[in-house]
Length: 514
Image (cartoon, rainbow, N blue to C red; front, side, top):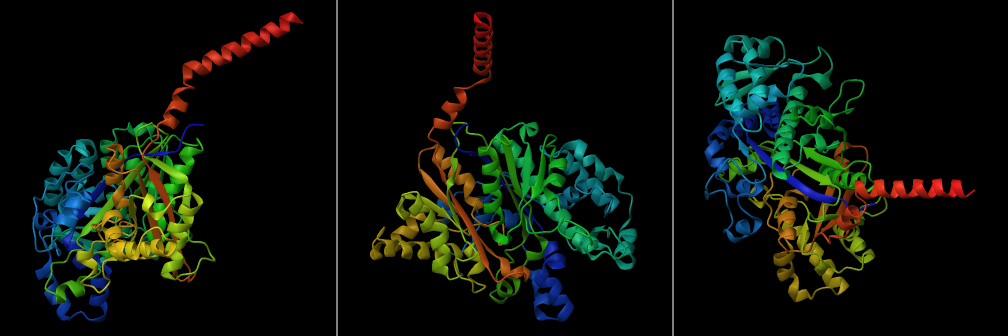
């Protein structure tokens, strides 16, 4: 067996969806139901950003890799009132406009549930056909649209379809998939298709960023927060295989992993373990975004005369492969876990996820160059009263470091600065949970800037009303030591054939001697 599984590549994508904020975000749909004449709903449209404004938002450019976490921390806070160059393409992915994303949703629909207005579909079809990762073959499905705006409106008004808007204009609808099954309602089908489409976009960028042949990916694990199923098996799945199909991963199978915000860390450990065990050589972990959380903190942002910053559907994908001798290794032997008996106090949680696994490995807190817990963007969370989430985590880690004698009390601020990161990820539960840093960590380790990082996923299981327990899991990634590749190189296919030949000749010689 070779070395540890490695982080071969990662991708990060955003789709800017201001109209979905209005019509699909839970904060807004709930307000419409309980207080349809509220001042918030009247004022909200004035706070929506254009695509250009959202693309020129510094944390979004960090997310797709055009800017770094260091660039972000050097920029005076807040960031929403500042503008950077709004590049669509980044080294990790892209920021897609809403109209193209609606077209991608239809590309991901295999049950003819999505209907688009003819002229809108034709215009978007041209754009997606020219997209280097989507192309004419996938975009050809948009040619089938023959519906007028009036026919689309009829679907919404008379057949319980979920409307799709662009620029305030009705441009399409998602039909229900069953007459009475609430799990296949138009609302749920739109949520799930959005999740699938954003996962597909990230998988396509993962293939590009990692340079892997799509046929080499053997398994896909989806770790979003949605549920794919029907009335008989509400969360049966399988988003992973559904997205793999559209992304062209012809040799892949897969399954879904769920753990609220901790889901990605669980999924990555599963993937690394499968590869380490030799079950599969290449596993992709992927997750699309969540319409429900669009504009989640919108009321607080509007009160403070800010733009709605939660206007993007995010996605990410990560490729885990056998040791290549270069990419960072996933240390599946340095794992922290929040157990049933851990407790829910912040100190107990951080202790179980950070200090306990490091103790077992004989490492100090200061031996980890960077910690990546929940990387929520404080531009979003601080106005909503949630504070700076990453900073709070780092202060708790530092406090435990002081208690253990790893650092001096006077060194807490320096520890937070040196070993922490400024948050930049959209607040969509699973999206910020440790994984946004993987792209930068891989680069910095290969470049020799850092040696070791810890990815920390935490989740609130009580949200599902099945348990009051908290959840969490963590693991360490390290710069590659080169040993695994040497071991693998030492037993190549040619050498195996030689060994078999030698064994057969020895066996034949023994027979003849008898």
